[in-house]
Image 1 (cartoon, helix red, strand yellow):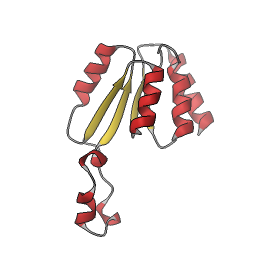
Image 2 (cartoon, rainbow, N blue to C red):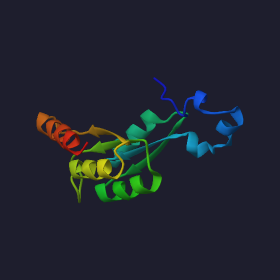
Image 3 (cartoon, rainbow, N blue to C red):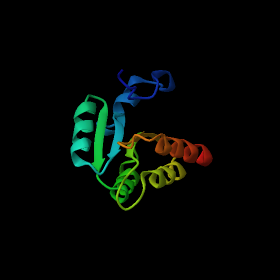
Length: 125
């Protein structure tokens, strides 16, 4: 499924206004935050396609700085990260911009991390 990469044309008054936006503005920005660099590369390779601009960070603190700098629409976030837990970073992201879509990615097969992520997201929003 190809994600939408621009606002609906009915909201625009002319084609020129849509085409005036730079190529970067039309891309859906996705930040991958995972301490496993090989997994980051794999996810980036799997997601590389027209309309997506991908960024990587291998720690929560680097991910937070990257998120603030590029203001992505989507974040793929590992739970177990050095320096700061991914769930703590989830709270920071939602506090900063609740419109960012965060997908929790984890090698932790226990339901506890998933339940905790859902609990925190619900409490924040």
